[in-house]
Image (tube, rainbow, N blue to C red; front, side, top):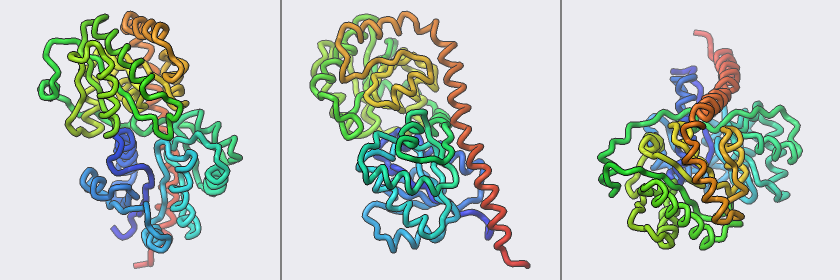
Length: 381
């Protein structure tokens, strides 16, 4: 259609992380619901992966692309959406905002879609975040911590707190036969676990120390509830760290690692099969919460603390500072109280899902304004 909008989406997309792909899926579903005929261009780290996963969008690279080439694509857009997910943090924010600056030089409207912010201490990144978001037509963030970081960076714009776009995702059925193919025996209790690499988001983690700690949790659950443990990698490097945990388990024969490739909706459906979930990755915990699986966060960053607080579940001090005794006691308490907590947690999850839809309410007004502007530009027939 000649008057359809052209919308660009910039984020950490391209298949490296299931959480990021869940964010993109939720965001695109929202856009399609509101603007079915829009032309959508996703700026991706792996355009081939994005185009294969989302055949109804166009995918273009943004890393290592010159300003001239970026401007050629940006010149086609009516709107640039930044986010969602945790992309505005030290040493990384400047990379995304380099593209945003080119867009703003061309007068392109910008909004942030439930973006995650922080830690933000570097002067260059802080300055770029303040400068570019000050010119955004709408700023929405996924949690209170992100709003506080932006306010401390000097942003005076109104900031709307919504929730992670992954809360907009629908589950896909995960047949039990797939669990058998993954080596999980039938007729057993099953615990899901999620570990992660230290990386820039969790630099304080002592790898061998937290591997041993998680192995103690896994062993405890094997013996406490007679369970098998299935490690769920949310990105490729999680496989290596899952093996690292299993090497410290005394009951390693009861542990398995999910090896096949699955979409975010499939992993969301997988959560139905877990009796309990214990994990570090934010979106692993979000998926457990959405499917009503009792879960215990092992916080390594503020975003995990924020999720625990919003959902009213125990928030530990942080996996890098935990010791075996208190942590195992919390796991034990979670198992004993899982049924008593279920209704309250489900109510909190429903509230957060509604908050995630709040981003839609914000973007709806923006899209209506852009549609009106596009119609006024159309030549008379």
